[in-house]
Image (cartoon, rainbow, N blue to C red):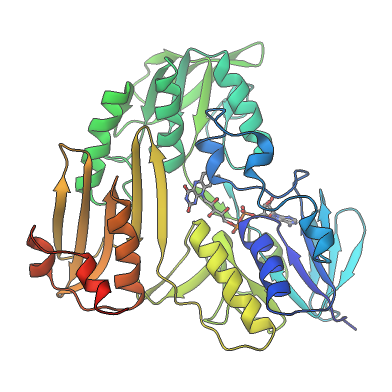
Length: 410
Ligand SMILES: Cc1cc2nc3c(=O)[nH]c(=O)nc-3n(C[C@H](O)[C@H](O)[C@H](O)COP(=O)(O)OP(=O)(O)OC[C@H]3O[C@@H](n4cnc5c(N)ncnc54)[C@H](O)[C@@H]3O)c2cc1C
């Protein structure tokens, strides 16, 4: 029963980092990394940034070079989908019919873009953006399209909209909420980005939904708004959020209320099965609540933590959450959480397009949003990660030298 092998399902940010970290931590047994995509594992963030703008070649976005896997004795199985976990026998069944024995199984399965349940959501010219395969098709279609509709003002929709507008396309973006990135940033930063996108040439429509997507000969021609208005469209990008890929776990009877539930050691309700990345539902110590996080930071830090644990070293996942998004000439970086702040303090200026918002709750720093202020962001990560003392008064004083807060700790 079982074997000495560690088997990782999902060769994305989390899975690849885990395989690399396991070898770095000295794990010397069999290591299998399998993923259902055919492409060599790659970074996702550039798909809506540099790759979309053709500012980087395809091999520029690879997570590791092709030699990395054989050199590190990582059995990389691409185009292979895991279909069933036999927990009692510690066996993983693949769609190809192959069966893999494991001693420890790690689910790093990420998620899929949420589908829009409306007429026409699957016709030619309607895209979502999660994979390299989708990014290739999207980028090619962008070259030949003039009227572009984006559904959803989240990070992916906004990054894509800014790029499309910068290439002279007519871009209309529809969002159900009353502001962009409503789930992720403060109202102040939403307002700032709404103005910025107008200046980029993106037509933003809030509190609006799309009722149907119409086509001719199977190709998209227009979208129909909830008030019945039709708008011409050569292509449509739907970016309305992620659904965690937890079906394998649920079918195996693992606890997965909204993604796969893990404890602070990233263990699921089966002691031989762990999970990392976008698909994970965990208690976040910085938030003080159970949640899922969709970020490279979360996937890679969970992977590094789990690698240590799997080789028997002490570790806990309690890293500071951080995230970034590039929209036009604006770099947004977020450390921690600001949504429960009772005090938000601005440093810098909206007019100069360079500012940070420091969020405090009961006098304690909880998160920092920075726009074109990478120095503030890096500092915020240290302040939050090392629990360094900082007061709202200190932050509010424009004369205060932020670096002095960390300098004292060196
Ligand atoms: C366009 C885009 C832009 C982004 N920009 C940013 C950004 O700027 N900053 C940031 O922090 N994050 C960004 N993200 C999010 C970031 O990419 C994710 O948080 C990260 O990829 C999560 O890593 P993961 O390993 O959990 O999942 P993934 O990287 O998605 O990897 C999971 C893999 O598992 C595979 N899989 C699923 N089920 C199975 C199965 N049953 N069998 C085999 N394989 C399976 C999937 O196909 C996938 O290849 C972006 C994402 C996208 C799509």
